[in-house]
Image (cartoon, rainbow, N blue to C red):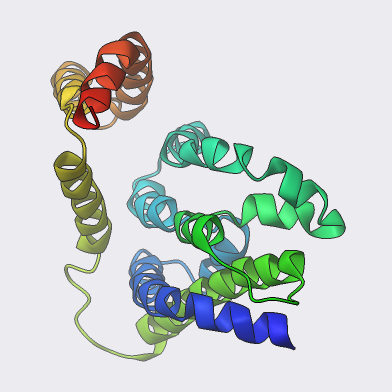
Length: 231
């Protein structure tokens, strides 16, 4: 089928990214005491790489469902804005509409924003297969990692740092990309203040809420700073 071949060609670079991150997640889940089935179900129904990596130590430490839900919302809130530009396109895809909304990850969004479809292709079919293949890559990586952690005996110390490393890379890239440093300074100040005030077990939710409120108040100066970059 032409649409599947087209989607494979466009998503092959994502395969390697998702494969290795998925393996890290699967091993991390196993080291925290969770089985292969839960790792695969997480990849199928949560399908949020950074959130999945972040949730493992939180689950292992006994974090509440409310904490996990709020964390998921703040980590993935950007997808709300991603989806706005695709609402009309996804609606006309019929039964695939709910899945396309769920499967709009950073990488899938990037492909769908820039893809140029070959003449004669069913664009809706091709877009669906792009999203589906990306998730299958992620599920496969999580499955391999969970199996490796369960059946291969090797020292797994330090694997949990993969989540920290992922977030550090994201922060460094954003620090270099954006001119305004107010979001970073705001987040650092809020996190440190609530950590010292409430301790490591209770600082996360107040930090996220206060960051959201502060960034809404600082929206105008941040946008002005960013806008001056393009003047």
